[in-house]
Length: 160
Image (cartoon, rainbow, N blue to C red; front, side, top):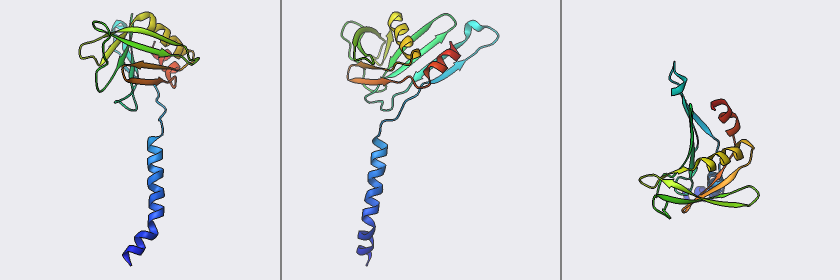
C-alpha cells in the first residue's frame, strides 16, 4: 500500500523538482548598488561606492566604482582564484561592446591578484557607456561578466 502511494505522487514531485532546478539555474539580472559615506561638515571627505556584484563568484567579475570629492576609480574584483598576470603586476582585460567590437587593455593588478585597477581613460569610457545605457561584457582570465546598466544612471547621477 505504501509503495503505491509513493508511486502515485512521484510524477508531481518530479515535476516540482524540475521546476525548482530550472528556475534556480536561470540567469539573474544584476543591478547596481551603492554605499555612501558622508562625513559632515567637510564635503572633501564625502565618498561613495557603486558596485555590481557577481551572481556566480567562481566565474564572474565584480565591478566597483569609488567616487570621492575629487577623484573616481574603477576596480574589477574577483572572489575566488586570482586573475593571471601577463606582465609584471598587470593583467589583460577585454571589453566586448554591444556592437560586438572588442578592446583590450592592461589593468594594474594589486597584491593577491584578486583586484584590478582600471586606467582612468578606460574607466571614463566605461562609465560613459553605462550612462548612455549601453551594457558591455568584461573578460579577465577565466572570468567573464555581462555588465548591466540596470539602475546605474540614476545611482551615478545621485552620487556624483
